[in-house]
Image 1 (tube, rainbow, N blue to C red):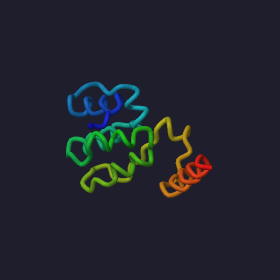
Image 2 (image 1 turned 60 degrees about the vertical axis):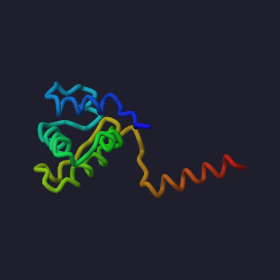
Image 3 (image 1 turned 45 degrees about the vertical axis):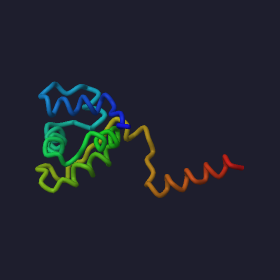
Length: 111
């Protein structure tokens, strides 16, 4: 079963690959605040460095987008930081802390 890619991610892909206008939602949710931000994401998309599911997984998470872009060694915009409108809304926990919290909640439900 294929993973459903969210509309905003599809809009970003269409903008980069189909030379379509970037939607306001894609601009905000992927933290595209400058031409350099757009070029950095366009580079990893066009080079095939990332797949749609990877982009969809980082939607709304500026630090994760920054990391994804930085992992492309030939990206001309190294060190660029992405910040989305969602970064101030959600308190993000490191993966280990999240797993520990999930386990505690699961244990409490089983009691």
